[in-house]
Image 1 (cartoon, rainbow, N blue to C red):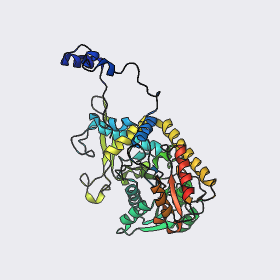
Image 2 (image 1 turned 45 degrees about the vertical axis):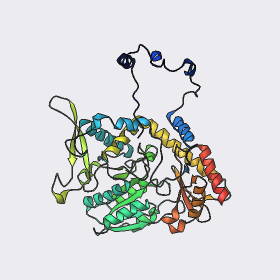
Image 3 (image 1 turned 90 degrees about the vertical axis):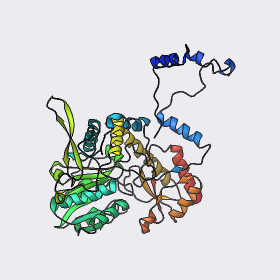
Image 4 (image 1 turned 135 degrees about the horizontal axis):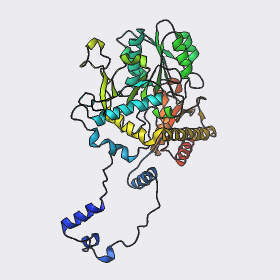
Amino acid sequence: MAGRYIPLTEDEKRRMLEAVGVASIDALFEAIPAELRQRGELKIAGPQSELEVERHLASLADLNTHSCLSFVGAGAYQHHIPAHVGQTALRSEFSTAYTPYQPEISQGTLQAVFEFQTMMCQLTGLDISNASLYDGATATAEAMLMSNRANDRKTFLIPRSLHPEYRAVCRTYAANLGFNLVEIGFGADGRSDLAEAASAAGADLSAIILQSPNFFGCLEDWTEAARIAHAHDALAVAVTAEALSLALIKSPGECGCDIAVGEAQSFGIPVSFGGPYLGFLAARQKLVRNMPGRLVGQTIDKNGRRGYVLTLATREQHIRREKATSNICTNQGLCALMATIYMATLGRRGLRDLACLNLSQAAYLRKAIESSRKMRVRFSGTCFNELVVDLGRSSKEVQERLQDRGVIAGLPLGVFFPELATTLLLCVTETARREDIDTLVRELEAVL
């Protein structure tokens, strides 16, 4: 967290000078010989954006310590975070004397949660959103449990292109519940085989769970997945590990999905060596009683003043344990607050512009890879800000060699997909400059 900067007003300067007994700032520094004092303006560059200043300071830091260019995504995305996001989150209006999921919350925290819910509904195109969950993986598993509560069915279609760690969490949840998880393969374009999903769907289908952009960065067809699910009176669950993409693509609600879950770490939360993260869950109104977590609502008090209250709390402390739908899915209050500040800062247009920038970065990388004779883009599907590159040899070995050269070249996919042992999952966001992407491609070619 950056240090807090509080500028002094002229009145504050005057009172400080009076307190130390001098008449002016110049008088304060009289002990310093005149020839040693700075006269005139400092020789500094013209105005720069916050991102440009951070890059300049990072370049100065590089003179003292070694750093790497990183092109890793895979569910954890490096985005620029305006400095005021963390500072605003520290304001006393958001402080509470008790844990931030109880009725004793301050109005500031309650309003922030309400605003978070509202923004997530706008992004997902759905009716209701809860106050957040632990992370994208547990949010996905909670959507699976929510679907089971809604229709009392136990079969779930889960594509292999769903984030492998999300799949692992779903399997852990399902292990002792008698759920049947059916995996669906992916095609040459990197997208899930929805024809296979249609064939696998049956009378016991509870939900189809589909991630877009998927783990390979490819955009999936939520509309077709929803059509297949609804044809069997099942639910369609949309998963998003890169929440920024929702500012650009057709929303889950518009595509006919019933539940939308995912990871909102991209909204103002640093990667921080693996956490904390921020899960989100939104759904259609008819499913509100099956939703995990809690909802904050807006009301009017007896004096006509607007207020915020904990409207729905489904924890075992509040209702009978057998009816509780909220157990380990406690919300990430501070992370949700930071995401709310970040989204409010950028606004609808700013988020869309940033998403377009990420899309163009991936297009630039794709073009550079396609022009190379030593590697190729593995999947033909449309991508958002990451894509899979086939190197024709062990990607883990190549990645290790590039790390020694100051470049972290994405994630070797062989660790999750043995048949993709020669591929790397590369990610580029707005934090990567075009010259950085050129360096990546040049370094890859140098070691192939």
